[in-house]
Length: 251
Image (cartoon, rainbow, N blue to C red; front, top):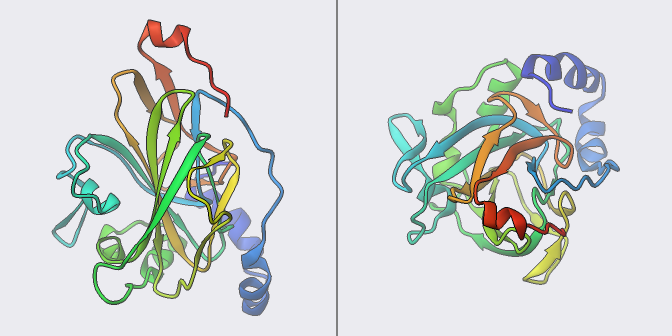
């Protein structure tokens, strides 16, 4: 369940600190808890366990999602797609050492994916952001990895609402695998179904292109801690009456 950062640190993290580093890194980190596979056509669920670093509507692909030491991190930087030209709602979720690292599909659809290389020859560490979170603060100046690190680009097309959105998995310095549970492209995934695992720390960004047929309402706050497949991030409201009459969600 979604919790404030303070509540999460005082409950879940406090309990885990009793475990040894060996147990946490060799056993606990790889846990894959059983969760109900919720189906709700009116909501996008969280793709990852973690802390919300930012959620923002970006009007232009050239506009900043966040500013890092005076440098804008734009929507085009997130997707690394020079041809992308739509405004979007962007939500960034940071997975700490204490989080489950199984990722899930926020809204059912057809998945295609592609690994994107690091912008430079190596990944920058995310450890400073982890320390920030454990210290109950968020400092954008420690997010330099966003403009640099390799990532997995995921596109999900949902035929039930004729809509395409994106998930971007961003690797940490020590990440040696972002492993999807399928080798096939264009495979169908149900809402909140497991689709990928990221080893060690990392981040997942949910990118929802704005569409005149829908209004998107965010349901959580920046710095809240959320769980994949459990906590809804965005509520969908349909604007077009004609579209409403033919709306038949089935994933």
